[in-house]
Image 1 (tube, helix red, strand yellow):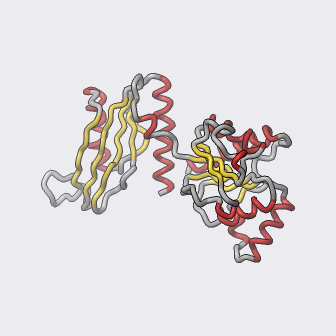
Image 2 (cartoon, one colour):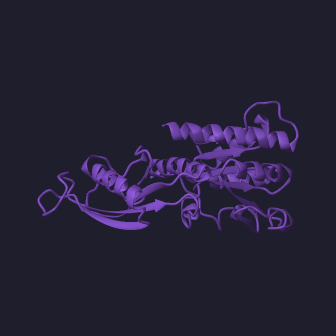
Image 3 (cartoon, one colour):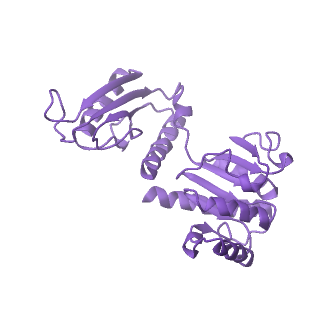
Length: 281
């Protein structure tokens, strides 16, 4: 699941750059599958005008046929076409792949001068969830957006989590307490969790829940001593030392940061580093 998301993100990076350069391209994506197939719904391939590709729809004959259709689409500039592939070699007109299933591939020609819904559909999926809306979050949120993260602010104080304070955030959430920090958000393997609440109690409440969530990154502000105290509390509750190895704490790269703005830079640097490491796997 995570690898599929990462591949789609890689294609998104290339697509965004091509749109910015004014270069048209073709996108092929698996929109449905039945039975055994090399890739499932969501697999995506981008073909540039020179015929080079990024991503995959599954390899083998499925990939070869899809690339052939992509090259045709570059010539015809046909906006959207759906192709159904039978992958059971025993059936008529099937690709000789032996998978036994079916795959439906949608191929779209993307006009860089008028990309339409493509920009919204392929917006990078990574979301940074910032728990705490205070000074560090206020400095951090715009920097994250500038490196292609959607941002969500969660706080138990309405004056620190609202659209006026964070007008370009994807969402602001006010919770009754940080014990309910995850009630109104959907965390998955591509999520980045950043814990910067106003105090130890809030950090503990969020961390307790975050350790049970899948995510790409989990970071928490605070000194090593303070964080050790939180870990010791969670150990008594049944968490293991192994669980804490997921946590980047103290959060951020060690650059001697002191001000909220400097801390924000250190956090984003660590997050970008993490994202790059994931992308290279």
